[in-house]
Image (cartoon, rainbow, N blue to C red):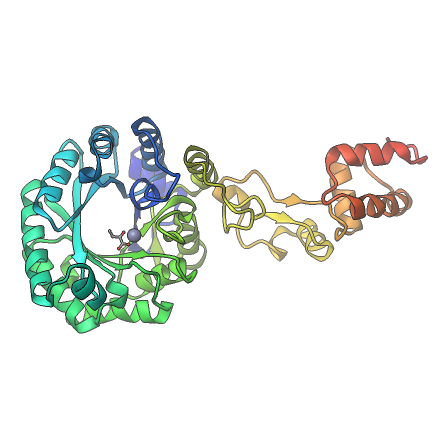
Amino acid sequence: MSFIDYYSSYNKMEGKKIDIFDTTLRDGEQVPGCKLRTEEKIIIAEALDEMGVDVIEAGFPISSPGDFRSVEQISALVKNATVCGLSRAVQKDIEVAGDAVKGARRPRIHTGIGTSDSHVLHKLRTTREDVIDRSIKAVKLAKRYAEDVEFYAEDAGRTENEYLSQVIEAVIKAGATVVNIPDTTGYCLPHEYGAKIKYLCDHVKGIENVTISTHCHNDLGMATANSIAGIENGAAQIECTINGIGERAGNTSLEEVVMIIKQRFGNQMYHNILTPKLKSMSEMVSDKMGMIVQPNKAIVGANAFAHSSGIHQDGVIKRRDTYEIMDPADVGVDKSSIILTARSGRAALAYRAKEIGINLTKEELDVVYQEFLLLADIKKEVNDEDLHRLMQKLPIGVA
Ligand code: KIV
Ligand code: ZN
């Protein structure tokens, strides 16, 4: 079975294809404490490739000899995905990035420069015209090393739309194949970010011939919402990371956007991600980077499919979809869990008792439930061991 047949047999392939660009190894690895060795990066890159990501941003080759080596080795090993190296719009950066990705089956250079007034005037201390000039030169130079050149307009989220259009039109004319519109500072509201993408679609000559990419940061907790607004308004690539790691408050979370597309846009859009690999991918990145995933993290958090209140437990036991909008197996979680706490009801207790092989009659359940509540008020969570002990203590002959 070919790679495409494999994915199409799993994912519905209707409507617009959304490319998933993973930057865990670049934007994610910039996070303090998340630095990885080349061997670790290779393991993650191969797992991302197997999971079906379209583009792996493997690093920022000019930043250190180690990062260069990582990008070079990942380029040589990855079988399906495009491998991308980041650079600033600076000659040496681009040359080094080109050298690092040259062994890839599908190499891409990602180059760019700040375009907001804040970046142009205060970071770069130059003019808008000079930024356009440098952008064109960067793309033209990158084209000498790779046919596939992505341009990022850093801080596009805070860049005035009319000027942003001029920059984007200029880089498309210079040969960019993908134009990345980052909300670098996580500033935009979803309707603003969506309107920005639409503005570019409506005003930039040649934009229909390139891929528009989102790259949204999570400073106000809106990275995922902004990325979705982007694809609803014309973008066809989402840049994201496993577990949403990235600079400051992080980047768009890969697992969130792929499940949103699958659950809510199934007839309009699709991607190639094999979603049952999401949970193990999340665990791998968390382990290797030493970054704990918050328990309430959507899709991959420990509590994402755990039910602890009596009302919810009663519903889920009767029928899973009363309180779950996704099948846990679809994201690689074995099954939903019923957690026994002081808020749990009789239905949950009977369910968990049955799971450990004890079928309680109604009368037995009434008795055990009172004992259970006393224990649950003392302990945060009642586990299987507690349950066994609880049953043995009771003179009801069920243990
Ligand atoms: O957030 C950002 O703007 C970036 C660019 C380098 C793409 O990470
Ligand atoms: Zn970023």
